[in-house]
Length: 201
Image (cartoon, rainbow, N blue to C red):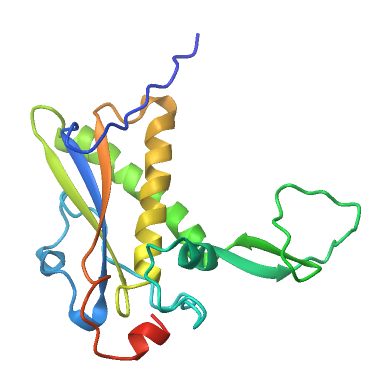
């Protein structure tokens, strides 16, 4: 019989292995630890998300921790070519503009990929590095945008949540040690002097 999967996610402070997704703004410099090279402590190269679409003026005064900013950056509005008055597709969230629906943005897809990469890095740290109760590990994954206010914040929060989901599922019991997941946002409350930090990110 197939073994049932055991969740590997535990609350912060309760696990021998902890992963932090940390956002930052390139305008204020890259995290100093990123220059130390690869290790299980920093398993992935810093992710540069400056090429992704920016937050609009409508929500730019808010930080990436705001629900309104998350909603905008995680969804794209697209024309619904199959628009049908009798269509009750639950997958599509209809908007006020007829014939338009929300679909996953590039940022949302990138968060999926980052969570999967982080899960693989955890697997390798446990399997190859021997990390666990006998050898604790605190790992950091860095994500940068221009000012560290919107895109990188939303991407970190979303990737962290999706990694938590993957750890709860723990398909095939791939992760054999308890893991906790957190987020940090280095520059989200930075004393920005550049007006562009509030008009865009």
